[in-house]
Length: 233
Image (tube, rainbow, N blue to C red; front, side, top):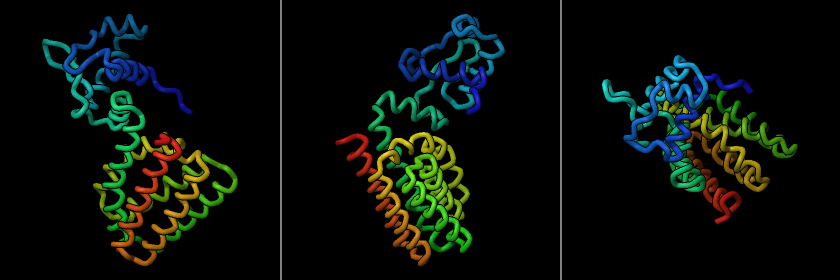
């Protein structure tokens, strides 16, 4: 795994202080010199880190006044929002909200894909489903997660809607780091394989209604499994 750049490390350090509440909303964050001394980095590194956070709208620079923390609903970095939400409402609530977001995006994408998906994409999904089965049988968690994520990516691309893919791309980065948590359970993997089989069957039939319902069923099963096996509620 590539080491984070020093600029990213500094930006993460400042974000950690924001997420923890040490730097509240509308609070003036420390100046460049103070951050340089605290983090033992150059002024240029701090400046670039501040630019990174400002580009994500996590902070705002007010000329003549300083740099302030923005409310979370103004942030445009999904990873940062997930970190803050997890810290604020708890990992359980954040996980549920992520599934709710996936449900809104993926059910519609699957409905669109039913009438637009190509034979090549269907063949790829079949191969990915086989890869999920093989990974499950051999207890290959990484292989299972990779095939699972790619299966969903094919559906998003098959929807033919560029906005869907663009909206989902940052969410996909978050999911790739969190899917291991749920997929570590053997029973959850079994459920996922069965649900993916139903989704693929609906897409092969070109049935838009059934495709949407199958994806919705999968999202509900994912939520149920999260509560039963991970959150144990």
